[in-house]
Length: 549
Image 1: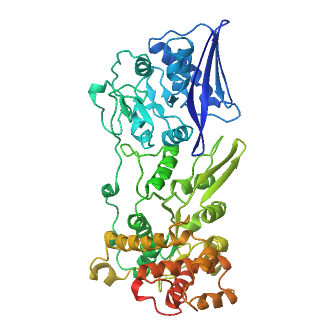
Image 2 (image 1 turned 45 degrees about the vertical axis):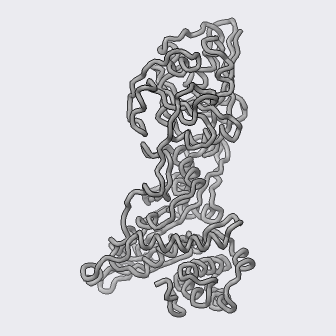
Image 3 (image 1 turned 135 degrees about the vertical axis):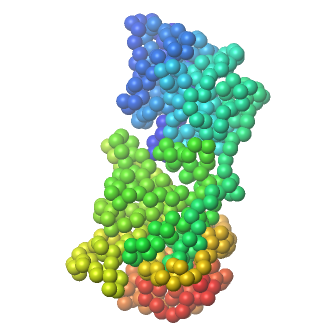
């Protein structure tokens, strides 16, 4: 009889659970049994592993084979267990030493020819391994840079099962041709198709197999759409700057062609770069979704997600067969979720946004389990005033009936809009604004002011869980950081008249703090609150503070 074990990781949402892969060989009728709550894709690994071992030149044991995945109560799926299952079987058959894989974490899919294929979710899997105390990880070569983002973990990237067996047995490593594009370019040919990050003497991996990952830094941010391209729209540009400075949600309403989409697409460019922790959070979500760009293992800029208005509720908040996968709200985590033609989305999909807007995460329950996905994003809604879009234009000939206009605008419900801090009317651009004036302020100029305002807010909230005004609960703002005496009187009067809800009052207070940060005030005064009320209700109650013009 032979027994061996190694480890892999099961992904539940964007969180990993360490799974021990055990292999047992005993005399009996040749059979291969896989136990431990595997799904269909994992059951198919029996055929992939058999073909990969044979085509790698290894002998297939003619015995009763049992592979157990523990803990058995955790649902497991995907092809990422293939490499661990194959190595456990080879160790049980004494082709490799069982002790050499007992403390290794292995992630990777096997092709029928024995090549190791990349899989989704390598970063969260390695993070889970590191938290569980594992310091040696084997991954497909193409995902080495992604896995190397986790500190204090030795990462070995392999192209084939043959190479891994040779490394574990301290044999000459066979060369393997790269059969596809590799994110960091072709590896050093001196490594014979192997790359490792963080390895070396004393790491438990072969000495000399070491290198560095490639991650984009702040100075490598790509040039995106520039705000200077937007003609006119001073009010909307101001709202965009305030939204970025305080992490506020934004509603842009106006006729077609006014520039709503152009403005929304330029919002990520004026947001501050992601911190290291935020980058890892975003990269983990994108890794699970399988949308990490080739050659850029770390997402260090705020993401921008703009689903089509035909998107279903599961595609927005997460779903799918079996355990749910991240939806648009999670793909926009730490970035911007832009819903163009927002009233055209289904009411069910729009109302599903209410929970993540408040909590910063989404909880999805399915028959296969319940998962919690991160969803801390800035929401930007864009809408026409009516189905034809000409309702607000004088002499434009809008043919929509008043009932049709009311029905169209009512598709964005009151409870949803109550969670949106800034509501701006985007007027049609005039001829003089389009061709008669020079370009407006560039993205770089506005981004500099946003960074200064964010720095003031971060200094104020140092030692708390918050860093932006849009994240601070209203109760905390009112009690720990009071505004100037009498500054909230205009908002309180509107609340008494029924024009503001309690949630609306808190959001006015948050925007007022952002206006104060942009203007360089120590705390909001009555003009900041009036400006915040105007940006929420559209009713002017006084001049806009000069520092925010």
